[in-house]
Image (cartoon, rainbow over all chains, first blue to last red; front, side, top):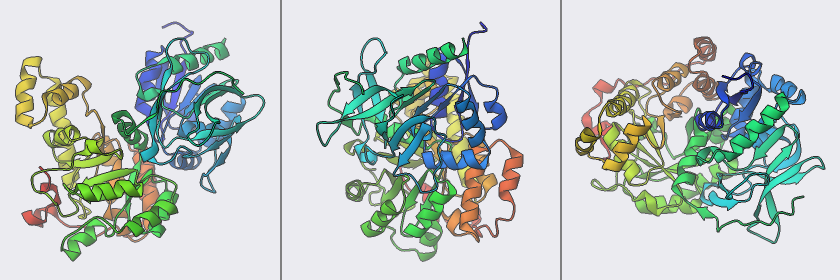
Length: 205
Length: 303
């Protein structure tokens, strides 16, 4: 194994951890689950998976992962969050629980379950800026959207709004942090994970 | 802001990927039975990944007897508006109209459940006909695959609901896992006979043999009453647990619910399970399954 192969953790408190581990391995990273602060200290980067953001947030606080994670994010560790993971990376959330804490890091406001309940969950082809080839199949499950972003946040993908001419932001990047409303880990298309692995490699350089 | 033009296809709802993907998001979590908004909030506070809205928990259905049916839509709607986590609800086996009603109420998952009195003794509901995903119970691999063939997007091993006794949950999960392991060793010639024996579609049998797991998420249900029970089911291979009567039939539901959530996440860490197990108050009393007459075994319902 070359020394440049990054080790990327997947926050394994709850959610679709296995699918991210598989996608990261396919994108040529060493992937391992992370549940404890000690395990977090051993990885170069982290994926926060999809799942139930209220559960994830509660467990991260209970088991002392939240503060170390905030410190690593402040220290420049690359993190990619999908769905619940996007909520965890948001500086501000709407429609969360009153006591719901996030890791934060991306200067954005994210609305939880914004696309509706499971009956409204959908998949749709979307253009993802910076990815070669065909559009990405976006799988949105009780998904959040990004309500607004600060000046330093790059918008990578949007979908048309169902209720007007506007579009909804569903993928963003701010420096070493990446977030998508949708779940590339459920599609077998590993390009978004490859994109993140390149971000990690650049950060390690 | 981006100025990239958007080339979205028409969004598709209710696809198999979206239905099965929903269950993937619940993995590692605890789904709790609740009978009112107050219990639903306790469950959400404790870290449940979803709640199952029903009028009576299985232990009370056993006690009361009579026909158990879908819950009152008012009660389901109250629970939906009380919490922000996903809400599931139960329909009777084969009662596709109850399922239609639940879909119209906007529940996130429908449990076609043996805990309610079956409405059809031959047919389960055609679950492909719905945009709302279904979870179904199974006692063995063949039953699981028949449910998946009918469109189930998630499987739970049945156990014996309302007993507070984990023995049947263990039996059913072990049965499913053993049958999957056996398929792994079969060559292509043997898979046709295996499909016949399992009374399941060949394509699904072949898929399981290749994946080494079900093509959908597998949870455990029916008898979990303690943090150690939940961790046991996880160590045996369940991707998460349903807890029915075990929480709200115990002495201190809020504390027990939070403890079961912790033990489900750290299922392989005995120290954390020990801490979670301290001072929980009384567990539900429970029933010895070998004293249950055949007619009162919910696991026998479904075909």
